[in-house]
Image (tube, rainbow, N blue to C red):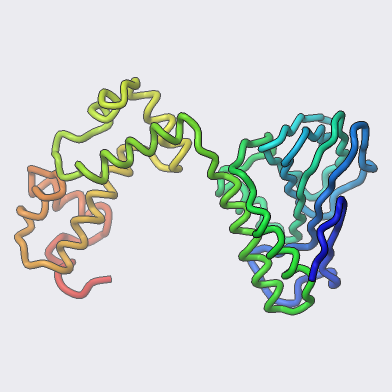
Length: 268
């Protein structure tokens, strides 16, 4: 059983993971430090993510200092020189990863080297990860990788006004995609935003354009109907928001490489 104290650190005993993984946890820790504390300056041999849960961290990476307040996180790249200090009593978690692919994972989740605001951390997940890191087995390393990914994913789920707007936009699309008049302009009007601003927010949040999302959501519904029903292609096109069956057919061919008729029946 791992005991949580004011300051603790856990390391994987081996220099390299004993099983092939997309990324792996090398070490993790928790610091509860007094005002005025600072760590020693060191060169990072691994990529590290730090989550501040109380107070504020002042993180210097390659000569640039950034403030990471409570409720925020930041990552430091492998090879960079790191110094952490605090001006008030502070508490933070950290995890290091030793695969080169971890930075791609972080970027895919929207994390950058700028401090980002994150959701409340789940202490049970860090406890679970600590138990897994403490067990030197290939199975435990695989479980630790999965748990760490869950922590990283949850830390990008902070809800703010932008998320509320995007949530409303998604609800409208999901409930009214069959309306041929539904488009970016109509959505922006419903949400009292300029179309350009809504498109920017949507792309930042979802990683795809608003137009592509609407098209792909409609096509997803259409493909399901093509495979599972005997309704005519024109009827299916209408049911997903396309009044012109010929345009719908061209769109399906462009996106899937097949005409609608070829997608009938058991297609995957």
